[in-house]
Structure formats: C-alpha cells, structure tokens
Image 1 (tube, rainbow, N blue to C red):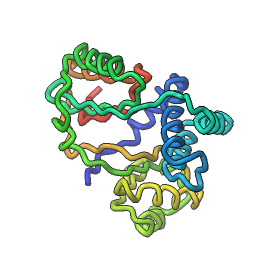
Image 2 (image 1 turned 135 degrees about the horizontal axis):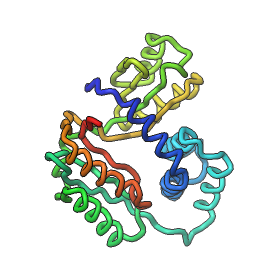
Image 3 (image 1 turned 180 degrees about the horizontal axis):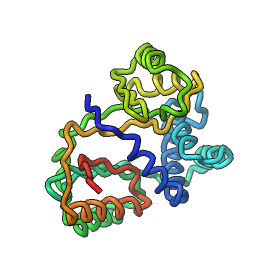
Image 4 (image 1 turned 45 degrees about the vertical axis):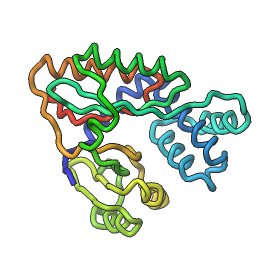
Length: 244
C-alpha cells in the first residue's frame, strides 16, 4: 500500500473547509438525507448513517444541526431525491480525476462538471476510464499528537477490528480497510476514545503523477477549486502530486 502521506493535505482541506463551513455542511446534509432514506433515522440500525454522523462530527458540525437533518429527512416524504452520479476524466499531464456527485438535477451537474474540466484544460471521459487506477478503500487518518495510544497498540486495535493495513507517518497514522469493514474499524477506534482527523471510504491512487511546472499546477487547482465550489459535488479524487 502506498505510504504517500495524506495528513498535510487533510489539514489543508480542513482549513479550506473551515472557511467554507456552509459548503461542507451542505455536502454532509445531503449524505444524511440519503442515508436516512435508505436505512431509516436510527443510527443504531443504520451503519451508513453512523458513518455520516462521524464524518459530520469530524468536520465540527453541531449536534443539533445533525439531529435536525435526520428529523427533516425522516419526516419529509417530499424532500428532494438525490442521485449518485460519478464522473471520470483527465486533468493536466494526464492526471486522473474522479468526481462523485449527489444531485437532484443531472443536466445541471453534468454541465458544471464539464465546465470545470474544460476551464482547467482537462476533459471528462467515459465511465471506467480512470477508476481502474484507484483502489476503493476505507481510510482513517489519526493525528499523532492527538492519539494517546502507542503506535503498536493502535495497530493491533485496528488489525483486530479487520483493518487491512497500518502506516506510520511522521505526523499521523493511516489505517486502511476494505469498504465492507470500514464501519467496524471506525467504530472500534471511536470506542477507544481516539479522535480521527478523517474517516471515510475513499479512492486511493495506485500511483501518483507529479505536477511540477507552474501552469500544470495552476490548471489542476482551477479544476479542483471549481468542483469544490459546486454544491452537487461531494468528493473529488485525483492522482496528482502537486509541487507547490
């Protein structure tokens, strides 16, 4: 498994999210709505909802906002029906990009995603054109400074809960799981009282493409920023190693 460090990027994303709380809360609100519609409003009987609530708390969403979102989704039969649509394409220097959206208007979303790729000198491809370059995995990142457990003990806790891999970085620990075992591993860490900087099922690149020239970095950031600004976009995955 790649030892490519994720923690600096996660801290960078968190800083951006702190400046765009409305955007991240909108994203998580939609995920709550979908989880409730699919599995009901009781987190005890809905593992997907438990995972979304953990993500909400990691992003400092207030408990009352979470509760309101659950109640609204459970009580509003006429609420918007969101559809998961994934787009794949290419950025500068052949970088691979996957965009996951949750939308109630496919035409609007498709237009916005294509526009973001075009403005950054990239292009949207066909389904499957780049996803084979990624592995879908559960990924949990823990800040070393916030972890009160020794690395060996944390590793054993994770492996006993069915984690696949444990990576020790300079400033963080990375725990990798299969998508199916993600909830069980996350809950074992949560029950041990260990705060998580990030916990999600994600797409991990098998290899990274290094972007070093100024224009390629600028164009890649243009695509990512435009996608980040779109409320329909839930996640953006890419294999660019950006030298900024």
